[in-house]
Image (tube, rainbow, N blue to C red; front, side, top):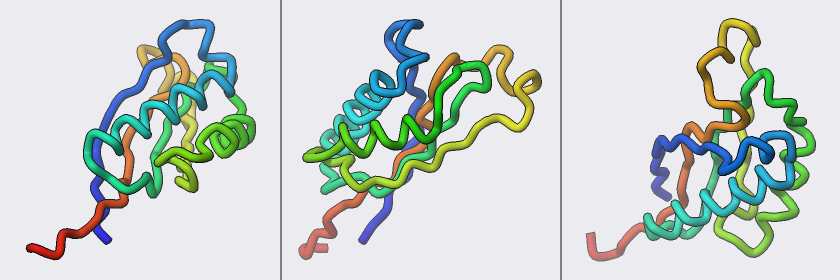
Amino acid sequence: MIIMVLRFTFHPQRETDTMHEASLARSLVYTMNDIASRQGALGVVAARIRLDGFSGISTKGLNEQFIHLSKGTRAEGALLKVRTPDSDIEDSYGAARGLVLESIELRLELSTSL
């Protein structure tokens, strides 16, 4: 198995989406599935997510929605590694409001012709 780590920044399309875990999870699943598809990956192994301290997003709620909404996609079964800032004041000013997809690990098929 080969794991590829890519860095992408994801921002919700509308400011109102930042408060809704289901909307964020839906966009996250779509983005992860799109990246996996474009890279020819079999699936997503894990993704590192950073939450803005002022976003009001529930980590538990985001995980639950992600599990539900990722069924049947390349993101199904992926581990979400969610981190929140240690200091809201230090890390949040000037940062994206909501969620940042920092990296994604993809499951790739190893070619037998190598």
